[in-house]
Amino acid sequence: MRAKGFRWSILFLLLACAVFGVAASFPFVFFLYADKLADSPLPLPLVLALGLIQNTIILAVMIGVGLLLTAKLALPGAPLIEDWRDGKSIAGRLRTMIQPAMMTGLGVGIAVLVMFALLLRNEIPQLPVGKAALTPIWKRFLLCFYGGLTEEIIMRIFAFSLLLWLVSKILRSGTGTPSRKVLWIANIILAVLFGLGHLASVIPLMPITFNLVLAALMLNGVASVAFTGLYMRRGLETAMLAHFIADVTIWVIGPLLIAR
Image 1: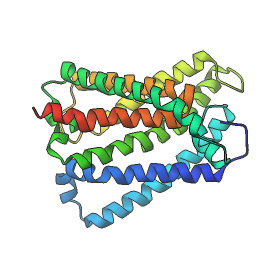
Image 2 (image 1 turned 180 degrees about the vertical axis):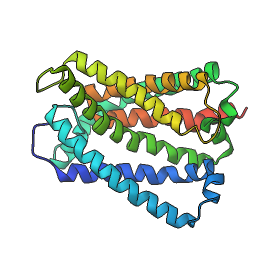
Image 3 (image 1 turned 45 degrees about the vertical axis):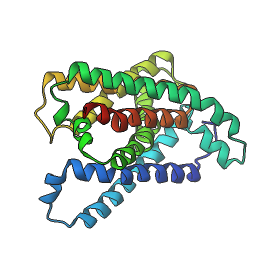
Image 4 (image 1 turned 135 degrees about the vertical axis):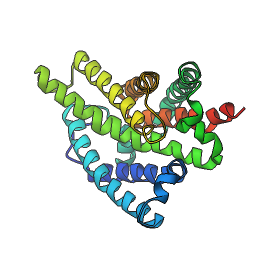
């Protein structure tokens, strides 16, 4: 990200993307946790509205803090959106991001499906990806926007920036661009947090076993490291596209294979 003052337009654009991702996930989430929601004392439309309001406030704070730290640490940020807001041509940047995003996204998606088959073959029917085979394909497709938009904004703009700043302070590595050591430490911590975050979504569905914890860390850890690497080389939008493609592979195509 270029060294400029705080840009509210970037915050609002990223916030709109993140909130859209949350809203897009609701049809699948409502199916996945239908029994839990049935016990809610509140009507479903109110649950939906409160969920969007709560997420909007939390995401606005995260993005604001993340953008401040992104500028402070001279991280890539969202170069495509910035160029567009500055009135610059984005055609060239778009061309350079599509191929690496597609290759990374497909690679991560296939790797995750293979690891599912190797590590969690017996648990698949109870897992969200197994239950996804019972849902319409449009719900699974919409879910991919949550990963590609919301998760990437949270993980790369907020969490990664915050971890880099904290690790730099702890190691007293100085100011400016983080060192390679700091980058790797923050990347590994982020990968673990990403894995544990996905594990939390499974807790209401089934007992947590050692294999499940190991798989969550491995599956999501590989994805997190790959997307962070792409973010550092080409910016947020490339990581977003890669994550979206990976999720389409896992959530749209994967259940078709599982159902056979």
